[in-house]
Every structure is written in C-alpha cells, then in structure tokens.
Image 1 (cartoon, helix red, strand yellow):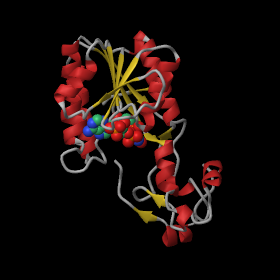
Image 2 (cartoon, rainbow, N blue to C red; image 1 turned 135 degrees about the horizontal axis):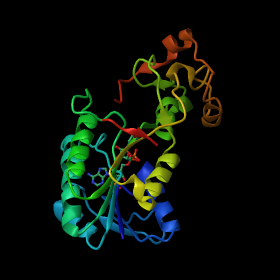
Image 3 (cartoon, rainbow, N blue to C red; image 1 turned 90 degrees about the vertical axis):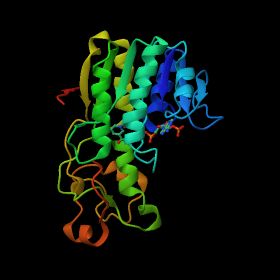
Length: 255
Ligand SMILES: NC(=O)c1ccc[n+]([C@@H]2O[C@H](COP(=O)([O-])OP(=O)(O)OC[C@H]3O[C@@H](n4cnc5c(N)ncnc54)[C@H](OP(=O)(O)O)[C@@H]3O)[C@@H](O)[C@H]2O)c1
C-alpha cells in the first residue's frame, strides 16, 4: 500500500492516478471528506498536523510519498508547521508504521539560509529524512509550469495584467507537473533512485519577460500556452501592465 500525502493536489492527484493505473494500492490523505479523485484509491481524511490521523492513514503502508506544502496555509499552517514540523512528524510516523520507502517532494534550491521560509522548511525536512534508515529519495522540482501559467495569465480573462513573479529579470526554469509525477512514479519503481537527491527541471531556462503574451491583455489561455517562448513582452507593455508580486522563492543531481 502506498500512502500519498497531498493526493488531491496538482502533483499528488496525477501521482495517485498513475499509481492506481499501474495496479498499486494507494491511500491518500486529504482534509476534505468525500474527496476521491481516482476510482480505486482509498481516502483517509485528516490534517498532516494531526499525528493520530497520519498514523492511522499510514497503517499497513510500505511506501510513502509527500506531495504537501503549506505555502498557502496561513497562520498555524504555513511552511514551518507543514513543510517542516508535519513533514518531519510524518517521516517519524512512517518509520513507526513499518514504511521502508519514502519519496519527499521538496523544492529546487532548498537551503538552510534561504530567504524563503518554505525553502528553509523543506531543507530541514530533507535533512531529517536523510538521517533515517529509510529508503528515501528527495525530489527537488523547479516551479510547476501549470502553476506559473495560472499565475501569469490569471487576470487576463477579466482584462487585468499579466503577472510576473519577482522582478522578471532573472532566468526561470519551469517544469510540467506531469513530468514531475512521472519522476515520482519512476522513483518508486527504480531502486537506483534510493538515497539520491534529484533536481527535477524543465528543458531550459526562460526569461519571464520573454514568455507569454505580447500584450499581456488580449491573450486567452490557449494562445498563452502556444506562445510560450520568444514572444517578448515589450518594456512599455511591461511598465503598463505587469505587476510585481514578490519572489516565490544541496547538492542535487538533475533528473
Ligand atoms: N507548485 C509548484 O510550483 C512546486 C514547485 C516545487 C515543488 N513543489 C512541491 O510539490 C508538492 C506538490 O505541490 P502542488 O503544487 O501539487 O500542491 P497543491 O496543488 O497546492 O496541493 C497541496 C496539497 O497539500 C495538501 N495539504 C495542504 N495542507 C495540508 C494539511 N494541513 N493537511 C493535509 N493535507 C494538506 C492538500 O490537500 P487537501 O486540500 O485535499 O487537504 C493538497 O493535496 C509539494 O511538496 C510542493 O512543495 C511544488
């Protein structure tokens, strides 16, 4: 039985579907009763901060996958509580439950001195997992393409501006969540990924200001997807329409 924390999420739901499709027994944890994204998947209801709920959900599992983050969780459910404390507690609970294999989805450039609390929390959880005797794999994806596109074009439908994360001057790597799910699945099949820290990245770095719609205003979702490269947003359009919203912000190998 494979336990998936975050099985309703952008990544976790694809992971669950893949696992069920290849005949694995899967139990996913969600805070929302009645959720069942995939036929044949068991659903455990609970919060990752609830130790009893996590322990119950892990019962009978030999494998665990962590696809949760607390970036949007708000007070008491942010990175320190979810990505650090709850993730560490889940690793410990997994060991007590007899789990052998643990795949942790962390984030590219997680580090103890990172300016973002999410990246520091992910790093702390990574270190904890690495110190266990579990068969662990740590995956460090870059930003998910699908999330990034949702943010960039989120306001276009209502005539708003395209949104660029950060100053728009730094190169950005995005990776499709579909590819990340395939890597998670591969790790569960391939023993050579055990005790490895793997970056999971898209094929090339892109310049945010050169990615997306020319006008940033009249582009629908389909055209935004089509024009992913080389279609520069002019400086004038940027000044007029693109708002800065802040930075989302080991020694990993590359997957
Ligand atoms: N998104 C990115 O660009 C990106 C980049 C690099 C790494 N990652 C990592 O990839 C993984 C998946 O991210 P995602 O973007 O797919 O996530 P997402 O779509 O935002 O979904 C978050 C998931 O976490 C669960 N969750 C959140 N707080 C919880 C809590 N307190 N208790 C139980 N479950 C909780 C949610 O379940 P319910 O709401 O059903 O309870 C949901 O399934 C995370 O580890 C994230 O750090 C993401």
